Length: 106
Image 1 (cartoon, helix red, strand yellow):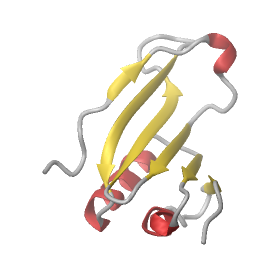
Image 2 (cartoon, helix red, strand yellow; image 1 turned 90 degrees about the vertical axis):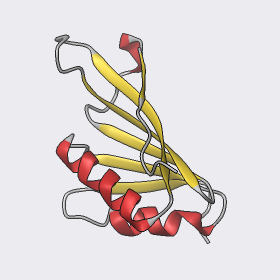
Image 3 (cartoon, helix red, strand yellow; image 1 turned 180 degrees about the vertical axis):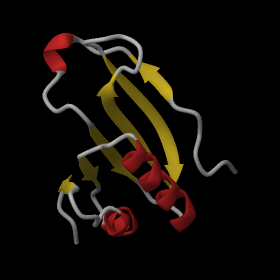
């Protein structure tokens, strides 16, 4: 099984831009679906949205955390209806990061 899959890139509309560098993870028991939104590297004024699955295993989550730091993501939002969010949240307790969640952590 691949710990981190290749992301799918999604075009977005100008009116959707609110924060410059963000990420969200829809947490499930095995994988989490990750979405990042950052400025497009080669198209001035545009943003790049990428979506991919990441295993909920420590190595994969830490690899994702390193990727998000490299992308200079400033806010990560977790969505989980169970306590599967814990491993993800623990990896993102870094200085300068804002981590929030929707749903109700247990």
